[in-house]
Length: 300
Ligand code: FAD
Image (cartoon, rainbow, N blue to C red; front, top):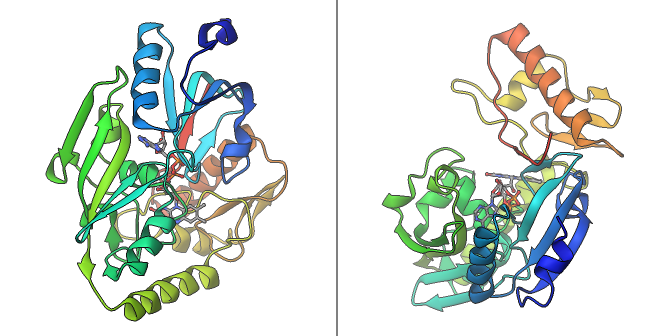
């Protein structure tokens, strides 16, 4: 398809063609997007979705790419990036309404600076608000569902929806967003008033715990696997003797066995094969089935 002529002159924000998606993921892996669009406001988002829908062009949304394995062949159709181009925070009393591309960390720091508490535990998750809401991301006993009171979303035809927390069907690393192919545009968080210094001390404590335990200086997508019922993926991988295990440029982190590192130029196919190998070894030795938390997208 001649995408350049299809999108010629359209006011959807920044549009590029054949862009390497490895530059949009924390693993540094991923083939090209036919079209990559960075919208800057809700109107552009709505118009783009309507346009793609009318022209039978598939839309795939990504945030900060911190939970993604994009295939080597990349993504056909239109990749919509909602990252720092789609970034805004509004405060109303103790309610924070945040555009989907804003990083969770920025939203958390903003809330603390305004004397609010509630997001410190999840502040170090390196995703966008849209990605975190869709995934119901969580850390240190807190999940998005515990603080998010409403979500504004669009379907792929550009129709708008406003969901309450109850309507989001939040569960472990899952929400309605995936069941119904929706795109999060913004989310509102209900926080509590607190002493600024105490909230900042909590924030620093959680940041410090992450820096001590996680390989934040390496290319990863965080925990590769979901927590299996009755155990922990990192514990099982460690018990199977896989700490530091490496094939090519794919490696189980020495620092945190739940993280798989791209130690160089690993491809998506390398990574997928390595993930399956690790899960296979764990299953054979322990009987626990590890399920991928990381989302695999693109043409295989
Ligand atoms: P992406 O990776 O870009 O996308 C993830 C999925 O969400 C994709 O299916 C995508 O299509 C979808 N998506 C993204 N934006 C939207 C949107 N606006 N609307 C609809 N769907 C959307 N996760 C945790 O839960 N807890 C942790 O403690 C944690 N620690 C991590 C530490 C490190 C070092 C890393 C690299 C990752 C970690 N993660 C953790 C994983 C990841 O940060 C979270 O899953 C995060 O919420 C993903 O957000 P994102 O913007 O990067 O989404």
